[in-house]
Length: 441
Image 1: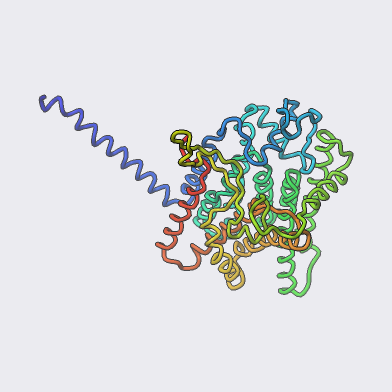
Image 2: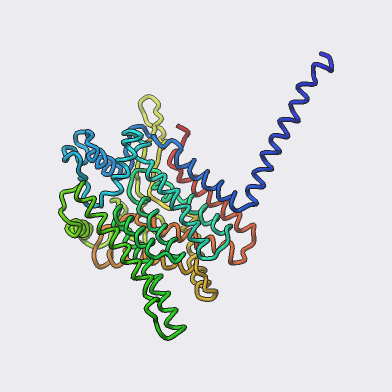
C-alpha cells in the first residue's frame, strides 16, 4: 500500500477526535452556565421519565387500576370484566372519592394517544416537568442563586418517589404541580393567582388542601412580621390572605360545580365535597397505627426511614434447573419509596434550614420549613388520634421542599466542594438503586 492510499484513514482520525473534543467542550461550557445546566437537567429528567413509558405493555401500575378505568368510563370505552368500575355508567366519573379534573386530563390524553401507557401516563409526565420548573421558580423568587435552583431541581428530579409518580397515571403529581405553581405565584406577590392555582389542585385531589395550609401559613407569618415591626396592621396587609382564599374558593367551588354537572350525579359541590371528606375520614384502622409492614399502609414516622416501602408493580423472572427454581430476580420493580440519600441528608438539611431561616432570614429556608410542616405534620395527629390509614406516597409533596433544604445545606453551609460532589455521587447511586427497570427492556 502506498503512502497516498493511507492518507484518508489518517485524516479521519483527527476529525473524529476533534468532534469528540468539541462535544466535550460544549458539555463543559454547558455545565459552567446555570441556565444551560438547568436545561440539561430538565432534558435528562424528561428523557428518564419518558423512557419505556408504555412498558410493561398492558400493565396498570399501582392506582392506575382506578384512574385509568375511570378515564375509560368517562370516554365511554369498555372496561375489562372484573376490573374496577366495570359496568359503570358511561360518560360519568365513577371515581367520586376524588374530584374529576385529573381523570379528565387522563381521558383527554387517552383520546389523543390511545388506550395505552402513553395515553395513561403523559399527563403525569407533563405535571412532573411543570413541578420541576415550579421548584426552580420558587428558589429564584426567594432571592436565591440560579445554581442553587439547579441543584434543588436535580435533587427533586432524582428522588424515586417523585420520579415514579412523574411517570405513572395517578393524580398525585398533577395535584403537586398545581400547588407548587401556586407557591411560586405567592412568593412573587401574586396571591389571587396562587389561590386560583390551589383551587385547580383541589379539583385534582383534596390533598392540595395541605398546599393551601402552607400558603396560608406563609401569609400569616408575613402579617406577624409586619405587626412585630410596625405594631399595627393596615387594611392592605390583609389583602394577600384574602385574595388567596378568594381565588381558591372561587376556582375550586365553581370548577367542582361545573365538573359535577357534566361528569357526576352530584347536584352541587357541597354534597360532593362532603362525600369526599367523609370517604377520607372513613379510611381508618382499628387498633391504632400499624406495627408491621404486612399491609400497604404505614405511619408518618415510618416514612422518614423508608420503612414499609410499597410495591407498585414487580415482575419477577426465575431461573430453573430441572424444574427447580434456583434464582429469582426482578426485571421491573416500581416501588413507593424515597431516595435513601435524600432522607439521610434530611437529618442535617432541616436543622440547617431552621438555623438560617432564623439567623439569616432566608426566605427559601423559611419556605422549605413551612411547606414541609404543612404537608407532613397534619398526618401525625390523624394517625395517632384518628387512626387514619396513611401511605408512604403521602410524603410526595414534602420532597421538593426537602430537596431545596438540602441544596441550601450543600451550597450555604461552607461544606468543602469534595463533600458536595461525593454527596451528589451517592445520590445518583441511590436513584439508580431504585430505578424501576432493572434490565434494559
